[in-house]
Structures are given as C-alpha cells and as structure tokens.
Image (cartoon, one colour):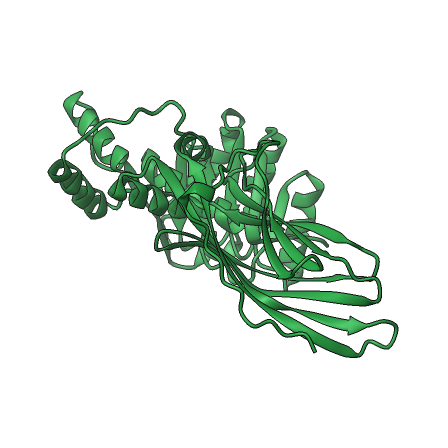
Length: 368
C-alpha cells in the first residue's frame, strides 16, 4: 500500500514567478510519487476580458500508470494575499490508465471589495509586487483496473509563493492611468478614517469630494425620498418617468423578487426603446410572475434567478438608481406601504452596480 504522508514545500523568493504568461516561465511541480504521479502549477494568468477580472490558476494533473487509475481529490485549493483570502476551490479529477495528464483552470474572481482589501494591504506594506500564496491540500487514491479495488493513497500538503507585478495588478484594477503620489502616514491615516466614516470604498473618493467642495460643487449625496401610500405613489411614478425617457440609457439593471404585468409594462417600454435590460428575480411560483417573465424574455430581456434575493433595485446606466422596498408588481407599486430613495450620487450608484454584478455572476439562467 502506497502512503507517503504530507508533502510540504514553500519556494524561496528567488523562485517566485510572474503572473505574466511567458514561454520561458516554467511550471512548478508537486512530486507526489517521484516520476509517476505529480501536479504542475503553471504560471498564473489574469483574465481582463470580463468584469470583474479573475486570477486564473492553471494546473496539470498527471500520472504514468498503465494498469491503474488515479483519483485526485484536492479538498482545498486556496489563494491568499498576506492575511486576505482571495478564494477557495475544490477539485476532483480521475486519470484513467494510459491517460498521462489533464489540464484544469481554477478561477478566483476579484470582486471589487476584495480588490480594494488587497490594494489597501499592498499600500500598507508598500509592496511593489504582490506575493500570493497558493495552498493545495488533498490526496490521490489509486484503484486497480478492471476490478476497481483500492490500492493505496498519497496525501498532499503544498504551499507555493507566486508574484504578481504591480503593472499587471493596476491593469486588473483599471488603474493604468493612475499615478502613485507619496503621502505621509499621518495624511493617509486621516484619509482612511474619513473613507470609513463616509462609507466610501477608496481613498480617491474622499479626495474627489474635497475637490468638488473646492470647486464649489455639491458634496452631499443627491437623493429623493420615494413612497407608496394611498394618496401618493412616487415609486411607481418615478419608475414610469424613467421608463418613458429610457431611450437615453444603454443598460438598465433590475432586481425585483416578484413581478406581474403592472411592473412589466414599464420594463417593456425600456425594451422597446432598445435598452439592454438585465433582470434578477426569484423563480416564479405564481402564474402572473411566470407570465411576466415569459413576456420579458420574448422581448429580449436577460433574466437570471436567485431565490435568496430580497433586494429591490433599479439602476439606469451609471446615472441614477432607485433603491426601495417595492416589488415591480401591483401590490408593491399600488397598494402596499413602501419606501425608498432615488439617488444620483456616483459613488452610491457604482456601489449598487458592484452589488448587482456580483449577484448576477452567481445567479442561475432562467428558463420557462
């Protein structure tokens, strides 16, 4: 019975690799059974095609057996930056006899708030490059062919250090046009305190507000209270107003757990005006809800479902957002007592977009 125990390995600084993919960069190998079973950790990649970007970890799992199959059970593949966990993955893969290797790619999404945590940590330690740690734990089990009898296993415990250049990191954050400005620790500390106090995500947002004030522009958040009461229905009226002039928008993001034809008529106006509509809702359990989604899908709306969704949100490009308690149905827009706000504050809208896009990424495609 094969059993090697834990394999631990951490490369020193001289062996760190760049995240830039290049032919001359060699993969790093985990020898599980020397010359018979191994895992190659290939150079990291950053995928900038989508938003948010992703750090991609390419792995090659290999064995040289012709009389047995090898089952790789990686119970933990974890990526860290300093004390910040970027993400965790699980991988199960079987190599049949005669199949030498299989390649897989594990993606770790750089959500906006995660990127900001990493950037804050990088600024704090004043690092010119970003050193990531990749942790791989698990085991490889072996089975005879054709009887599938268990032949033994090897456990894996491996830590690899990987570098990411500052230029590549700035590309991932969309900061290629930014410059580094040295500030004293005291000034940075005061700006960070204001960032937390004002609820901003970046110190740059604090400085932007200072500039607005200096130039005589509004500093406060621009917003309007909206309600649904018996005598006034400003949530409905404001949605109708935006739907009527929706031709000026390119994209509208909508979250409404429940819908019916009352809310759909406003979305239909947007679709008729050639607006790209993205809708997140719950899986319908009522005919009115299902009928509404059928109509919207037939008109070209992109629809995803998330049964844990409780938020109600409409975002018009990066210009305005309506955040309220009202569903886009007759009860929410006409009968129930609802409240919300219309905001045109850029920072608030950008945060709302980040929330929507994060949920959209993991939501399920809707099918009738």
